[in-house]
Image 1: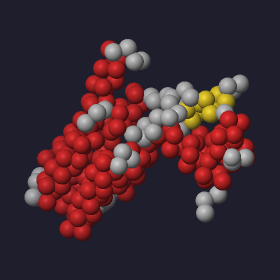
Image 2: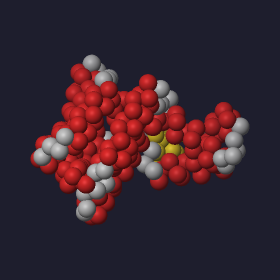
Image 3: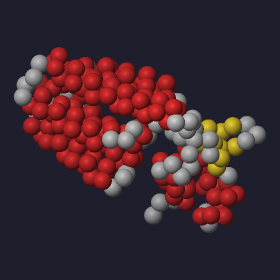
Image 4: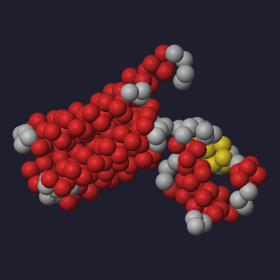
Length: 220
């Protein structure tokens, strides 16, 4: 049975993820206590965890606010993942076993299920696992650490970027299949690196275009 603090944390995290508590929303402990029947101490603990994970910020004299998405930081981060991840995948590709490839295919299928179930948190987690499998045999622990750290930073900035730009999640799944086909067919490292890099940059482009569209429509 999860602790009260864990329950409080999961409630808040789910509501931030699904947009119930949007950027700038103020989380008021007294209100949460009334709504959920969980006392204030677990809520305080969950807010500290959310702050440590980058979901919220504690603002003096205001309280806990859901963080606003920093588009620029996210774009820079994913562009870096595109370059590092593309290189790591190209190095890793000749060393991937049939079991690795099947594991990656299974993750992609699970991502499709998460998409159908409208579960952005699971989709994002599986996406990261998919790319970690493809880069896992690059033979360079420092490069692997750099890729891992950038993915972790990206998750703090935005958990559900794929959901943000309509149609992007579906396109990403098809691109994953394309990358796996390149690896299985013994394509050149350059081709694998280029495809993996472009795949991440396509997400950057889709989100950037969608942000511009929203701005033009006066949503920002």
